[in-house]
Image (cartoon, rainbow, N blue to C red; front, side):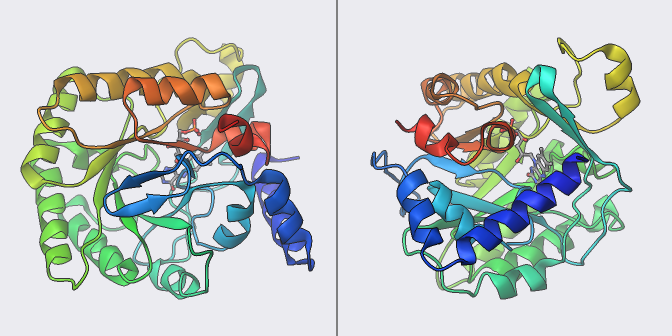
Length: 326
Ligand SMILES: Cc1cc2nc3c(=O)[nH]c(=O)nc-3n(C[C@H](O)[C@H](O)[C@H](O)COP(=O)(O)O)c2cc1C
């Protein structure tokens, strides 16, 4: 089956299964881990350290059902101010020999208002929700700040933390916003807007695994200067190095972000570098290639406070979180 169709199929299946009276509770009993690897961070209580990474439930259509599969937190988005279709299909590809995916979805989503509406629904008391925010494809980078501000404001009442996504490879020129000056301007403005709210919410920045050491030094400086609450490391990579999948197949797939096993070690390196070189001890959410308990432990050993999964959930299925925390 086409991987995007398979995603929609699984999505519908999760919804249907959990709508059957009693089956949600059975799923919870089967898949929510007993171990309480809980942690308090930014004034939030995370029931465990494993979260669902951004991009799986972009529009917040399934977070209550996904909770049954054990996640301690779920990140919705990336969402943009206006709905947009994303890139032409096919745009999601499986690389089974590498336990990896390549995607060039391009922030397909229903827009921030629709997401905010869905997040008003009653949710499990201990479920932490992150809101991952981006800019519309048609918004030029000079106006990107407006898009991030619109999304932050619309989601503020409904999410527990924010993630500023400037690291997707699938929106043209988005990653230029990772440069020092534009990034500082965006984060400063979001912190100022947040300060106007009655209740402050943590703001994190999600970075690419393809940054050089000197760009990582800039990121550290930016975090320390803007006093955002932490980082998410990392997004998908544009690198195609060291893959088992034949080169001809990789070439045929074309552009997009590579996730899963091939990004695991690079994500670890980035986290270690940030931890070793930062003067302040800001928390990092690790993401990239976690498919086993060993991979999960590696991320914690690298210095991460929390860990997210995406591709591992696709390949390993609903028992993944329980196995990571066993
Ligand atoms: C199909 C797909 C869509 C994604 N969409 C987003 C997104 O909208 N925003 C985002 O910040 N990251 C997105 N990601 C990146 C993941 O959140 C994660 O950072 C990356 O896949 C590495 O983790 P993994 O190896 O566990 O998949 C997406 C990943 C995939 C595979």
